[in-house]
Length: 147
Image (cartoon, rainbow, N blue to C red; front, top):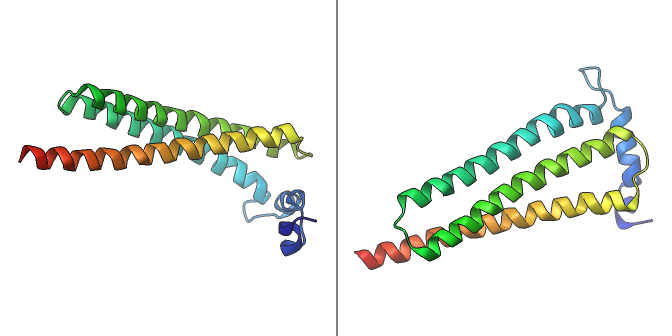
């Protein structure tokens, strides 16, 4: 048994089974409520909205900021990271919903795909936050050099 199983007394499959069987006040199982509306509606909507906002905001910054060649390349990279975040998060949500709706055992390759999508999402978020930090840092440097 793994460490998680020792702590809870349940395997990961057991946790899904409990969520399938636990009824809510809406007459649906906890797993059904997680899939719809949380996973398929709210999370997908958030991913699309967040990615679109960040990409469009950075695109707008390019039109307002002085045109430094290196800044254009940096901002384009971080716009791509925002779009990749949106794509990977939506793909992850759809993949997880597919796995949960089957209500069966998950093959190893399916778990690897789910983990890869999650890892991609985390990397793109991290790079996007790095972009924000870099933008603030460089903005302060150039603001102080023009004063």
